[in-house]
Length: 315
Image (cartoon, rainbow, N blue to C red; front, top):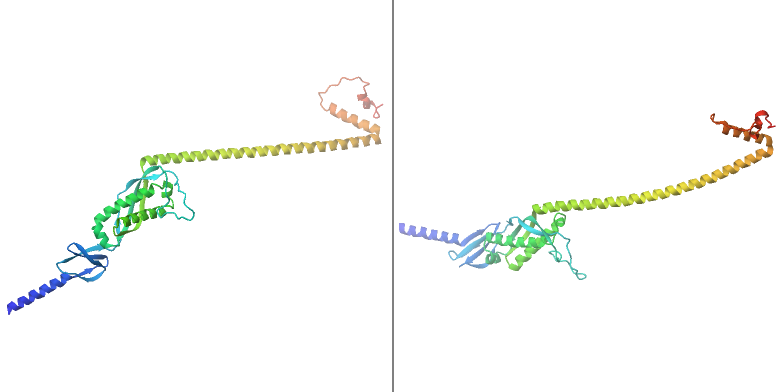
């Protein structure tokens, strides 16, 4: 009896072990591949309960979540000139990874990037990479190459402007194209440039260049200001000359009209009363001549100038 009970327990235990070895659960965060003698069998298993052959088949799990890859900061040469676009045929679209570039010189900067990726084909991932560590190493190389290629034709001004989003998209497209060509079974979700720092030498040269550009701009502005000032002064001088000439002309016209009116008045007065006119003219002469007490006249007593001194009629 005890023997039969022992056999029963052994059989039940063996069944339980066999069932436990035949069933496996794939978590929502995972995807799995069944291996038989090291070779994949069937399609990747999605989350849920699955069956495999005990002892013969093994299960290899892969993460379904977005995974990080964070290369070390590296020195990258960026373009110091404006991008030179090759001429394209009418209607031809620009490549996804940006314009084709010719002959650009560069300057070094320190760039820190990171990427996020996910495993989209576990079977292909198993064939080419197998582990996350190898995938990260491979992606770091691809990401660094793509970063150098894109930034090599990008100016610092563009990298620090709103073009930064387009530049990161270009890097992402290049990385995905390299992954697709190598058939790695993964896909880049996002690429970011965390920071881009100037090297100490470039920082110094950049500051010097900025100072030089500002000085040139100031010199140009000052020269334009002086030129404008000369134009304004020249215009003002011209207007002043014209105004003075017009004023002198008007003054001469008024003076001539006044002289004409005075002569007319004198003529009318002379025609009305010659003696009174002569008397007034002499009084004016006396007033003008004798106004200064220091004035000395040496004249003959019977001079015509003194004729009104003795007789108001001048006799």
